[in-house]
Image (tube, rainbow, N blue to C red; front, side, top):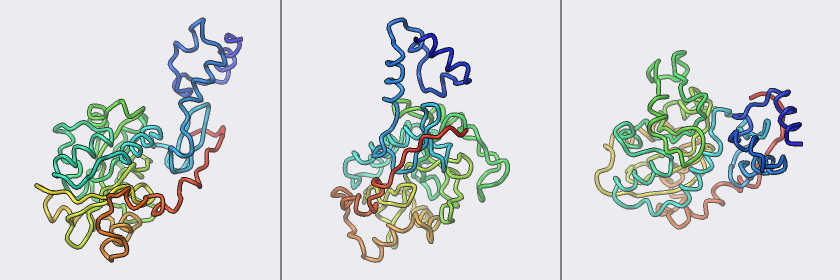
Length: 284
């Protein structure tokens, strides 16, 4: 039966990578066809794990709106962000937590991450798009090259799942739909954006791809330059990613929000309840 399954799959030009299975599962005499299917199903995310629409092709989940997203990796980042300790401590420690939760090593190549106005998006992208560049100039105000692939490969922590992570540029995020590096160059959602809160810019929020609150922090110590923190807010001002910061600045939300991020599910408008997983056969 297993041999017939393999022949059937090959006749449909289904690759090992498309099935997200290691080849030994197919050829080990002790593994049944039922076991293969079971292994496939265990890799699938549940709706509660991924707060956006998912589709499935040949056993592989992807995001139909932004197919460059590494969906399992994004899910892992969201889980780790939720589990982060207080983000009110020394900035160097806070930044270290953000890098680790986002699936990035702390090294020279990531020294700019969250330390300036622009590199404040944590993006998780599939390997097939990680070497995309900006040669068409689709993302304004950045290099026409912007070849990040080698840096993504070297700096990404593999325990977060397939694909890679990078702190991509925020500029263009004030538009609808967003026209930043994540959404345009990589056709990927962001796992989170860091946005500094006006008018003092001494506290920040992490918001998800829809601009909903994930976490809040008031770090201490050697913060990024004041101009960088203000510039970061200006890059998202007027768009959905500034919404939570604006509500804090207007006094509509408490300025201290670390206790479960004010029950983030309320701020998120019960987004998880609207998740859908579609079974489709269309190409990515």
